[in-house]
Length: 349
Image (cartoon, rainbow, N blue to C red; front, side, top):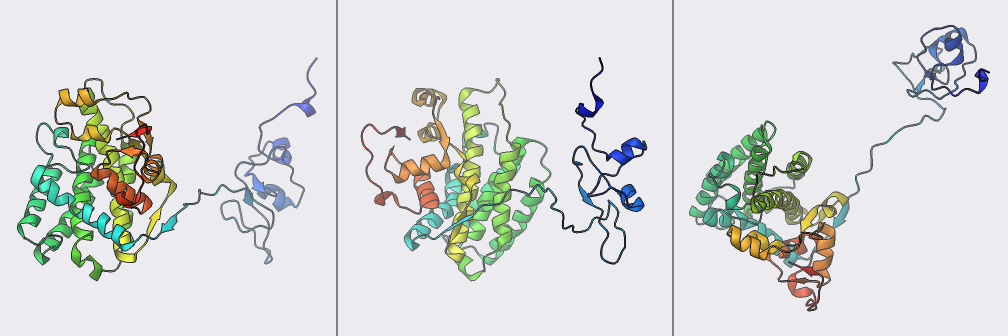
């Protein structure tokens, strides 16, 4: 026996009048344009997915479905998530420590080709062109003999090269090229925005957006899985370089904001960034030493917020330079202010 048609479930979105007349319904709300034109009731079994106002305005002029107007009838809307930002102020000594630590990165790279986020063993066949070029600029900056102060000529060069790297960043062909451009751009920004004359320039939101954009692009395009052909150490160095570059981007953004307007802004995205507890692996310079220092990978990854909370609570042994900068950037604290960790602490670096 056929089922009662009035009780059948339908997914149709057209109004009943258009269904009966076998006409295409534009699914206007609260009445489609056809029912509105005939001034008849318009009934829907299911609310239309594309709800649009077709109510006549007070002037009597009809506004069709493609030219909708405000409607007193509540209209379902999907809003973009709110961008939660938390402003924080830090003590002057913390700001000076954070700025000085990030300002030293170009000098460290000029001397050793290694920083807290660039590892020389990541490029066994030689530095890629963006990183090689910025290495020469870092050396030139050291040769000026003005620690923390950029000469007018070099300042112009930095700005020009920063603009060039930003353009290259938008047209990279591989992720490896994207990472190299990002790392080079971060070092350039360290010299640009943290030089001692930086206080003479007003805060620029464009620079903050640029730094956040570098981190966001790396996060979005980072490979989910790495080839099995990579050695365990090289695979770890690649993944850790990506994580550290993203973190340094946000630390530099924070330092720039603190140095120019005396407060910084944090978001949930920063707090949720992945962090590897085994920070000591970064400084193991051979495959053998790295394998010997390798601990159990299970439970080694935490969020940046968990890590910084552990640091602030004194649950971390052997705090590294990287950890000290994270503590300053995330918590506004110095290592000297945190309690000594107990022997059986569950977080180890």
